[in-house]
Amino acid sequence: MRQATRKQWVNCGIVTVLYLLFLIWVSSWLGLIIVPLIFDAYITKFIPWGFWRTSKNKAIRSVMSWVDAIVFALVAVYFVNIYFFQNYQIPSSSLEKSLLVGDFLFVSKMSYGPRVPNTPLSMPLAQHTLPVFNCKSYIEFPQWGYKRAPGFGKVERNDIVVFNFPAGDTVAIKYQQVTDFYTLCYDAAKRTSPSVDMDSLTREQQKTAFDFYYAEGRKLVLSNQTEFGDIVVRPVDRRENYVKRCIGLPGDNLKIVNGQVYINNVPSKNPENMQMNYYVQTTGSYIPDDLFRELGISLDDQALLTNDMDNELSRLGFTSTNSQGKLNPVYHLPLTKSAYQALLGNKKLIAKIKMEPEDKSGQLYPLNLYTKWDRNNYGPIWIPKKGATIKLTAENLPIYERPIRAYEGNSLEVKGGKIYINGKQTNSYTFKMDYYWMMGDNRHNSADSRYWGFVPEDHVVGKPILVWLSLDKDRGWFSGKIRWNRLFKLVDNIK
Image (cartoon, rainbow, N blue to C red):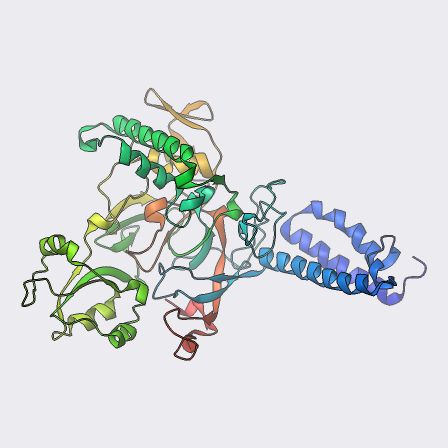
């Protein structure tokens, strides 16, 4: 210690103070065990941190210099990714045309406050699986509870938010990019179980039927590893990252009527570039590529329907035929309001446009409640708020069962028509966390809260703040692959 220079003491003091401020910010006093190591690295030097620098073996010095640089970079990336910001790529069209497939985003962890990781021992830049090795990118022990450091603000209505997929706690590996585990179980059961007329059953009988469907479907999925793959349970921070727009805040009453979202009975402002799916029939010719480009419709979204659907299309009113008596071309396209109006006004090319029918909605949340809701007509539904108490009934229990059981860690049973939470009979529950309702701007092509429910506050990752790169996968490098007009565009300016 007597040999330490003034500069070493100053550097040690600065680093120690900054580190202590960091610990105060994240409220993690366990990190104090690192302070003696900082002191040793700068002052006492009992541990030979740079032993390799004095080695006479040139190979050791060369290799260890690379190892030292790589370890430093990984540690730096680890802390930056967890507490400050991370890179995120838009993988699907659920937020088009606000955010596009191929947009690369900087996601701010500071906007809502960074979470202390549930699984602190993990490999940076890998969400849950290590590439090449195809194994877990994290060690399951230790696992820490939910805690969030102070940030710049809270989630606001119409914010675009990155969050962990709530229904991604359990995953069938071969279907993880297709559907969530719970929908998979219901679908598997319904393929093999006799159909039930839900209209003829009481609420209690309906719940019994849904419980049976899920239990039987779960058995089928768990017993058929060849088809479904391994079943993996993931901690909150290792679930897939999703990005959607926050439509409903804690305590809001939400409903959707004819595609219009209402919050507390007031129509919510729709995103400027919101899309719906339509069937579009031409007068005989095909829609040219340059018109698709002008409308911003990607190749993946240009679905030309085959003759196998003629009967269904005729039922929907598409009757325009050619000289051979076959239907003129019919496309299935996601359209913004402006794209819809542009096509509708093109009378020489377009014969008829009709919105996709609601029988394409699929299974909606909650999966174990029989309703006649669809993606355009949904609810009303109340969004849970921290500290708020709700009366539980047979009607609303399926809606709030998952938050109570899965997200807030309670046991829940229904016996003899009575509700038991943690072994005690009750008819009410007080929520421990805030919840949010997330939806995509591409309303008919978005797996969102209408399908898997609420997003708990502990699943919120951060807020996209900047599009730093945007690549159009339908174009070549010399034909417009880089969307120059989107580079360094602030996400807050995208409405």
